[in-house]
Length: 576
Image (tube, rainbow, N blue to C red):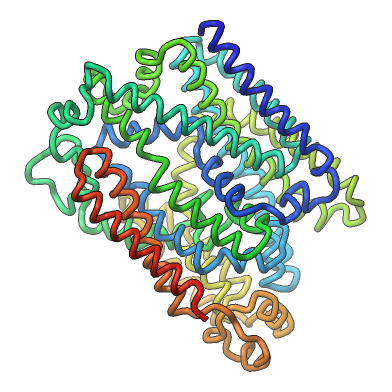
């Protein structure tokens, strides 16, 4: 890099550290300030923080690989999650904020009672806060190492230690500033990262070798620009067309988004998304934040990456499916002038650091609130708790470094864990709305996929068709377990019902015993808002894409649908 690039990068790090130091005293007040920003985040900060966290260093590379292999429609691998994301907005966001818990895992002992619930809470604190968390961080570290190796050509073994140094810096500012520092830094980092990606997209698209949108359309096959996958076999054999069998299509669109547990997009909300909803200053702020996140995450954020990905197909025809993702890095090296290259590298650091900061703070919240405070040291004062939380943040960082060294060996476990979450999602959704769900429902739904998984692989049933079997068998098991075991104690259910105030329809005897509780959740209105929200996200996604690709008529139709969807959401959301 030139001197100006180095100066830009140094300035970025200085601003990030300055934000952390600014919020140091506020984070030291108590555990809610440290882990939930005192439950006072405005919707726009909470929403931007959600988007920034899901923008990791490898995200543009992953989108580049999807587009290179299957065209624009290849993104349906993750676009289908919007169905569940919008469900979280209108069915769960206000309930999470209303619950008043510090973490998603603490919710377990609000909803269930007894020693079994305490065990499940402690188990999930370790499983999610430590085990799953360090795998995610190790994965993100590995991606950042690949990015810097591609940009600078320095051996990966050398780059790795620079990444570890950067993670140590993130651990330090996360430990110092708590969630306030993480969220405000997220906002700064997201603006920098997205602004830089947009600049790269404009420069590469207008390069003479590409020739703008018109040049792309001349050089790439028509199927490459389709927003939708072809269903069934592709008789024309189009290269760059995303083709799904009919079972695979229904598995993605009809099952995956509600049935599977997956980090960062848990059915019903969870993880760091739940943390941001719990941090919002009001129930409406939690809803607005989550809605903003869904729109920005699916409709606004991907297009700069997709544009660059399409250009890499033209610019680097010798790339293979295994090396396709590096096209994004080659574009940075080949087309960015001095100054802008430093800005893009700072953007990659911003994307990386925003994800790591959230994972460290979120993981520490589980280990401290749901393990240490709940089972080990119950008498620790606020200052002692904050000190221990800071130490835990650093310890998670150290364990994550160790996991990164072995990420190649555990990378297969990532796909394994996602597939073995099939069927759990429905319990995570229904536990809010059906009184009969008990702690054994959730435990059996967690265990069953791990038992079934070996048989699925033995019979060579591939993903995503395997979801039909995993989800179906799991549903039979947990529903059977639910009716064979006793309900939660009436006092537990009554306290939950009075606090959360879900719709009374599926709360049977609990609702009858508390007739004074009048829920503000009208199910029909919520369903209309959910369907409208889905149309809003996809209409904006395809409308913006059509506009970029020069299809003005199509874009106007999509944006008109988005306008109608917005009107319906506004009307039915406020209707009593």
